[in-house]
Amino acid sequence: MKIKNPATDEIIVALKPDSKAEIGQKLAMLKIGQKDWAKETIDDRMSCLVRFGALIQENLQELAFLLTSETGKPIQQALNEIKGAHNRIEHLNAHARHWLSKEIMVDSGGTHEQITYEPLGVIANISAWNFPYNVGYNVFLYALAAGNAVAYKPSEFASLTGQQFEFYLHRAGVPKNVFQCIIGSGDVGQLLLEEDFDGYFFTGSYGTGLHIAKSVAHKLVPVQLELGGKDPLYVMEDVLDVKQAAINAAEGAFYNNGQSCCAVERIYVAERIYDDFVAAFTTEVKSYPIGNPLNAETFIGPLTRPEQLQVLEYQVADALAKGATLLTGGNKIKGKGNYFEPTVLMNCHHGMKVMMEESFGPIIGIQKVDNDQAAIDLMRDTAYGLTAAVFSQDKERAMLVLEQMDTGTVYWNCCDRVSPNVPWSGRKNSGQGVTLSSQGIRAFVQPKAYHLRP
Image 1 (cartoon, rainbow, N blue to C red):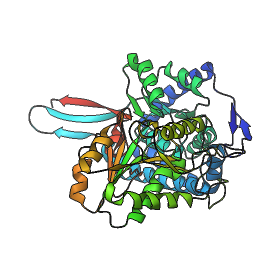
Image 2: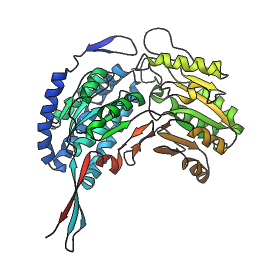
Image 3: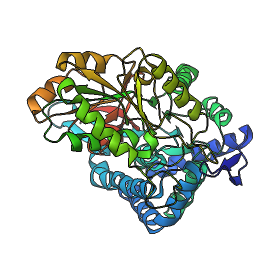
Image 4: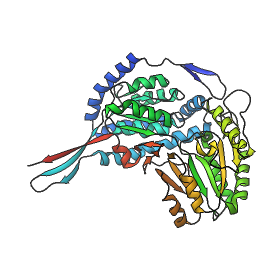
């Protein structure tokens, strides 16, 4: 399996994918290791994870370079991701003991009642390439804290980063028979579905998530799916500063080349400020430095997956054929690498693919709306349900819109952010299950009820 630099098309290294026999051997090893790991105290398990976090931060520059080399993520954004993901460890260290401890429900009378939380066992974590630290930590660190063993399969586009997770977890004291990295592409992922795991946790596309859910349904084990989004942003006419709103919206749409599940993917703007917003938005996007992702000033690097270039070209052509106006971008950049121009389309509508189908790239469609109800109807017109955002001075008015969003997360005057303090979840085609927060900790355990008569 050749690992290619998406900025230069050069092969970094060739890795040998795991075979079915090797996966079976690793799973057998994990099943043994998990039993001993579960017997460790939460304090001892957390000590290992805290040491892991320290090692990652100590090797920040090297790990960011590796992440940029294999995914094309601009180096400053790679540094931001690795540093920012550390808050998951801080969250676990602050709260895991409480949420994993025994709960006494009734301790008087004829029958005492209590709840304990037992690990699921050995879980398969099939992860993503776009934010491997964030989405990986959301699963495998929380699973390990709860006493599970983990078979971690990174995306084939972030395999080197996945191997570093394994290396530093083992150095931090997590036993080798508690965390194993599985290398390979989709065919290796399919092999995991055929093995006897106690839970499946996937981050990626709706199509693959649906396939996983169908494939393992007969096992009746927990399945969590963090899938895609077509996340809307509504800009009301009362925003204090239209230019600043446009700057914030553009970052929410184009950060990491728009390769984020919760990136802003469609924008609705009140008619009164529409022209001013679109002008400011386009000016901001045109200012983004494009180029070598290893340069600190680069904001737009290459797309990680070359296949996505065709998706974006198709969405642009479809929008233009149906009446959209192209304000900037719209084309693949010639030369080496998977580069696509940051693209802004105005006068869009829901007959266009760019407003309805996930783009996962540096492209945005903007549509004018007459009033809040029109915006609500358009924002809800989607098969996805990950996030939705409103920019407005008026909190009460914004909340009336956000309360009608059928999404796991809503934002007021912000967007494209995740916090370990609150649940991260999707609805409809954006997935099922929860990571982060107290609910994300308990996603990796199963409760046992005790009825005790002294």
